[in-house]
Length: 251
Length: 76
Ligand SMILES: NC(=O)c1ccc[n+]([C@@H]2O[C@H](COP(=O)([O-])OP(=O)(O)OC[C@H]3O[C@@H](n4cnc5c(N)ncnc54)[C@H](OP(=O)(O)O)[C@@H]3O)[C@@H](O)[C@H]2O)c1
Image (cartoon, rainbow over all chains, first blue to last red; front, side, top):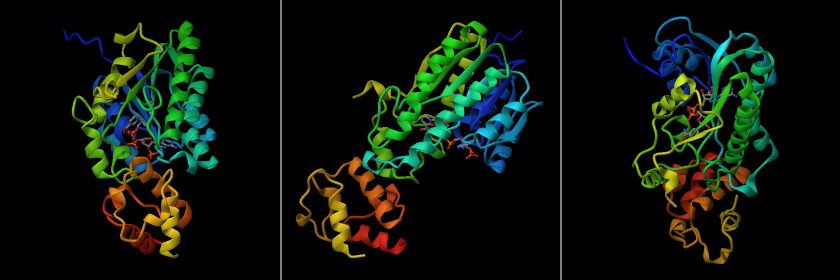
């Protein structure tokens, strides 16, 4: 017999932002741990790519734009009963304060924060989550354990999620539902590519500030999410799990 | 667009930098007050004023203000 306290056998798990990066890796790792996975994102081709990477059978994919409330309601209406939900959707924007525009802030909060608040709201209202299920939110080390100049809007969206995570943990505990977050520093995904306003040179310099000498890989985060989804973390709720290669120990 | 106007917009991204010390030949990354937040501000200013989206690598690839100005003109 195989002893595995992190098994996700017989669990059904929703993963948002699953077409790429951390969400893709999480969906794949969940399927390897025995879960039935429902994946969602906007881009059908990339979502299909993730779908083909899943192990085992019985998985499902649903295209949805979670910055939009109608899509959230339709998504939740199509879901079977869940034992876990990984809220991983998110985008980044780098802009110093004097250049903020109302529409930037609205778009960032709609995609990063309100999407997740209202998915959880719908899941609870419609009683989609089984007793003993686990909600995981991908927030960020930025906005929770430290802020970065130029990242203010992003950091605000994540710090609001941090607060929401704790409220959900408190309000859902009596239903046996846990809620926790993973808080990564820089992870090698599309989001961290030097295509944006951060240059390759700056990225190389930044990596030197990590005691473990590298950025994270999507799987580093996915395996922490597995822990929070599994019964191994049965007594853990309201926790923000920092996963940062030691970055926030350094000033 | 005139390079003079570009230089004055560029200077505004620093806390207090006298625009008159800047010229097209200035190697801007060697300026005392240059840092990563100023770099982001320059990118945001160029986006707002000239509707050109530069990348971080465009900044790394430019030495003088003239280089940066040329990149912006090419993409306008
Ligand atoms: N990479 C890092 O350094 C880092 C650090 C800390 C936290 N995080 C967080 O980790 C999470 C995953 O990011 P990642 O690094 O894996 O980036 P990524 O590769 O860009 O993945 C983001 C995912 O979100 C989906 N998405 C974006 N907007 C959406 C929308 N409106 N509706 C539905 N899906 C949407 C994307 O799919 P489509 O484009 O197909 O919709 C994609 O699957 C994010 O919440 C991010 O803030 C990342």
